[in-house]
Length: 405
Image 1 (cartoon, rainbow, N blue to C red):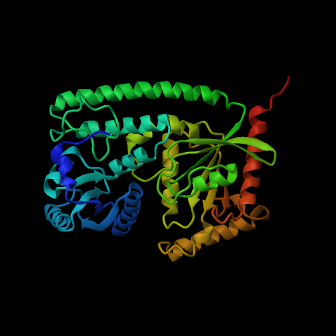
Image 2 (image 1 turned 135 degrees about the vertical axis):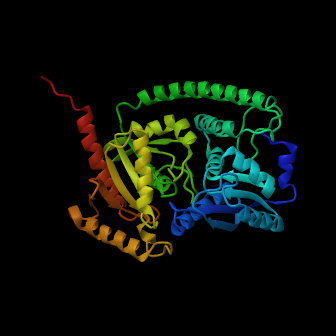
């Protein structure tokens, strides 16, 4: 574990170590409703990391303040609340610059995190395999390098670990930059060796159709993995329950294939994570079929679909055949955040699709086959299995049938 300097570590000495406040802006580009939605997601991230959200601060400005993200008056208000309630963390919904972090720590006297660092911390907590741990550590150092200041103690005695909330310290800035750059080089070399081993394992799967579960985080991919593969995959009501790619052999209607559960996507995902997880995301790029799982009960499922599609485009997987799997249809009525218009839209789309092709699946406006299920209640699972089996069989015939001349 990398350790911060004594002065910075002592910031939390008399504080409630599990408490946090959240800070976000309403701007010309981001209305209040969207900001509140982002804060709800940020609070979920914070709880996943293990901290209690005590209060949320929102300020309406044209653009973020250059020095402190929020205005000086709002900083004073936040500082007073943090002091009165002994808050340990101030978590900002957007990425902060090095100067903003430095200024805010001086003014708020608590640990400062932005959304990117919080996500990195969760990834570090969730990573299980050697590959995932190396990828996360590399992403953390890449995040940290441009944010180094003289508030840190020296790094030379450190031997890796997490660059999260207790990031590395320093005495000499240039020395520490060189140490981190060397560490990044070492991690890249280590990751390259691991990726070579992954390529070797991948070659052993060449004769199987490969199906990958993709989707926004916490939409039920791991639960679906458990049902389809009859595996013990981790399934929790937390963000990023899966960081490591998990591969299982599945047989549906005598059609064998390899099913991969992959890391969930999220809005404002740190670019360093996307870059460092390219080998894990390669499982998606090399898939023959994608099961794009969507939380049908979420008020912003359209945006979540867009986030996933954008990420698929970034990694070159946008043209892979897909089945759009709307999950959690059993809780649409119970989700208070779902507006009546969105709920009705989902219901209408479900009604149309459920009547097509003898029930439950059709092609939506994007041209993807669409299935509506509840993984937890196992509603329409047999239909989903039938659709997957047909797609796998078609892919197998196209991929492995040879023609003799």
